[in-house]
Structure formats: C-alpha cells, structure tokens
Amino acid sequence: MTTDRLGVYIHIPFCASKCYYCDFCSTAAAKREKIDAYVYALLCEIREFAKAQKEKRWVDTLYFGGGTPTLLSLENFADILSCANDCFELLRDAEITAEANPKTADFEKLSGMRALGINRLSIGMQSVHDGELKALGRIHKFKDFEDFYADARRAGFDNISVDLMYGIPEQTMESFEASLDVLTALSPEHISSYCLKIEEGTRFYQKRETLILPDEDAVCDMYERMSDILGKSGYTKYEISNFAKHGRESRHNTKYWTCDEYIGFGSGAHSFVSGKRFANSRDIDAYIETDGAGTREGEEVISPSVAENEYIMLGMRLVRGVDIPKYEARFGKSFEEQFGKKLKKFCPEFVILSENNCKFTDKGMLVSNYILAQILDFS
Ligand code: SF4
Image 1 (cartoon, rainbow, N blue to C red):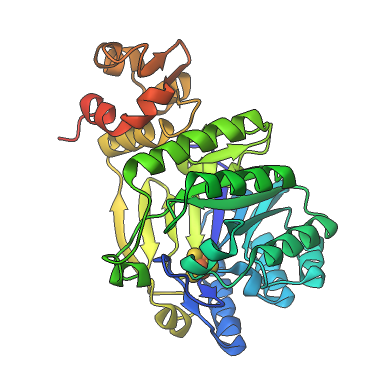
Image 2 (image 1 turned 90 degrees about the vertical axis):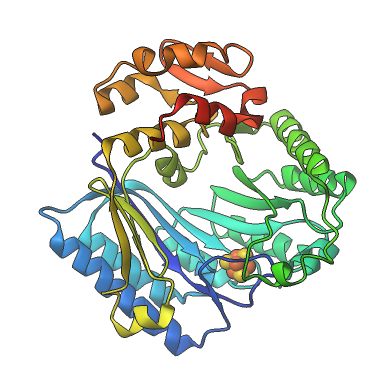
C-alpha cells in the first residue's frame, strides 16, 4: 500500500552550457523555439497521462528538475502549472519546487515564478570559490550566486535549498570549510551535498587521467567535517546527503526514499506508479517529435520481493531509517521475524533497532552497503 498522494516530476533538459562533470539528461544552448516545442510536448504528455487515470490524482509535490528549469519563460511555467492544475487535484499546500541556476533568471522572472505558486527553489551553488566553479565548468561566479540568492529572497522565496559539491579537483579541506562557512551564514533552509563522481560521457571522464582529485580519505574527512559544521549550524542531516532546518526537509525527494508514488514527465524522466517503474527516453528530439508519446522505455513490474528490498535499501538512506509499522502495513510481515535475527549482530554499533524504527548509526552509514547485502535476500 502506498499513500494516495502523487508526486509529479517535470524534467527540463536545457542548460546554458554543459558542466564538465554532468551526465544528466540536458543539452546546452537550445533555441527558444525548441524550448517552447518541448513544453508543448510536455503538456501533451501530462494530459495523456491524466486521461488514462480513472479519477484525478491528488498531488502534494511538484518538482521542476533539470537541466535548468529557470531557462523556461514565465509563460512556459504558467502553461505547465495551469495544465497540472487541470489534470490533477493539486493540493493548496503542495510543495512546488524549481531547480535554478545563477545567471538564468532575473528578479522579475523569480518574482513571476513565485506569483505563479512556485514556493521552493533549489539553487546550484556548488562552491564559493571562483577557481573551483571554473574547474567544474560552471557558468557562474560566486558573486552571481550571491546576487541570485538575494533576488530570490526579495522575490519572496522563504524556502531555498542550495547544492554544494565536494571532491572537486584541487579542493582542500580549508577551501571546503570556507564554502560551508559562507553558505551557513546565508542560512538557506536546506542544503544538498554532492560528492563529485567522474561519469562516462562527461568532459571530466575524457581527461580523468590528468585530474587532480582529493583522495578517498580526504573526501570522507570532508563529509564528516560537513556533517559536523552543518549540525552545529542548525541543520539536521535527514538523509545521507541532505540537511535541513526544522520542518524544511524536501517533501518531494523524501517520496523517493519512502517508495511513494511519483510520475515523471519529459525526456529522461523516471516514474514509479501502480507498482511499475518506467522511464522516458533521453532523446529530446524524439520526445518533441512525438508530442511526448512513444518514448517510454523498459517498463518493469516490481515484484513483492524487489519492492521489499527497495523499501529497506531506500528507507535506510534516511537518518530516521525504516518506519517499522509502515513496513508491516505495506508488506503484511513482521519486521522482527524478517530481519530481527540478522540485524542483531550489527546492533548497537552499526544499527539501532527500536520498536518503531530501524536505522544506521553514523558508523553504520559508512558500511551500509555491506550490512544491507547481509540482511536482504537478492535471490
Ligand atoms: S547546470 Fe546542472 S544539469 Fe546543467 S549541465 Fe550543469 S550540472 Fe548539468
């Protein structure tokens, strides 16, 4: 059983230019006509999905991800939100997030987005050092981020998340601490951290032999230092990489970790609905040409055993861990009978098991993959 509230994800695969580390579904410097055509295809896909539902679904989170959604015009945002309002029962207190990048929207656009009902921004800062931003291939300097952040506050955004990276070429603990200090002084409501990974198909992958990256120990130290500094600055770590002030956890992203339903629209978007996982192809032109139809790939019906493993694996990413009564209601099994014996040997050093929750300790988080492999049945 899942909650009847659906999360909606809308993928905007356009960026001002391609960052050197990025393997997301996004393309650089698209013309306005192409963006408008893409939005038209999105509207078609949303309407087709809604038509196929027996009744309108309640939606409590809507997330514009990318790519760089702030490259959309205000008319694009208005069209998508009005379509979502027509096709779903969008709750009055729905969390509506847009990912945003500095230099891609001015105060006027941010004010317009806020007026349209977007109530949360997730801004890509990554670092406060211009040298590190340049090394990552970002188009902005730190001053651009500062101006953008100030504009967003002035435009009325009181729920802002900021992305921060570590493991950046030539980054040191001192430079990372400076990023953390400057960021916490700005006091965003939420911080998402990302450890740089060199992915195939990226510019970094091509020059991977020449990159000077912090080693594994240095990266682990950065993670621990970050947890410490953010904890002392009023942020609670609620997921391995995500930190929030009280009550400001991302409601949309939490759906991914609690295996709640979400529908993704747009090229490369993933969905989990009615016990099935599926994704759209990353081919943006094909998506536009077919008006958002016919690009769905690899539908997988999730078997009960896979669903159970996913529920435990994703739930254990949350610092609060797996909610045992919810697990039992969803799978009709006793958590104690399923995992109690296997987990006890990891308690209390690596795992804390109480009546209502099962969660990793900080030490357990570091060896989480090993423990999960011991307790879950992948046969
Ligand atoms: S702005 Fe984000 S999505 Fe766009 S290229 Fe850079 S990392 Fe990728």
